[in-house]
Length: 121
View (tube, rainbow, N blue to C red):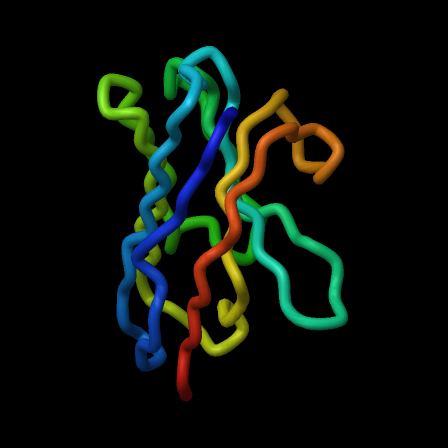
């Protein structure tokens, strides 16, 4: 059974930084595109960033481009999201996921339970 477990969330002031991590187990996901999504209560889950299996290609939603950096370490089965210059609107539960390349929830097959990021103004 595939498991994705996120960590690194927390409370930070606007302008601060956090680094999210996601460890996968139960199956090698090194051939999958991996991504981060985020969601607030009552809202749809939103694409944040994705990275191809090799790490050669990445994409970001416009609102985080230039502030967030996605990376992966396939040897360690890890996915990361470095978040700098955080803004209150970045507050959400962040989810790690693995699947096909794309920006839709439906493009991804495996999901973690999420980690809360709260940015205070």
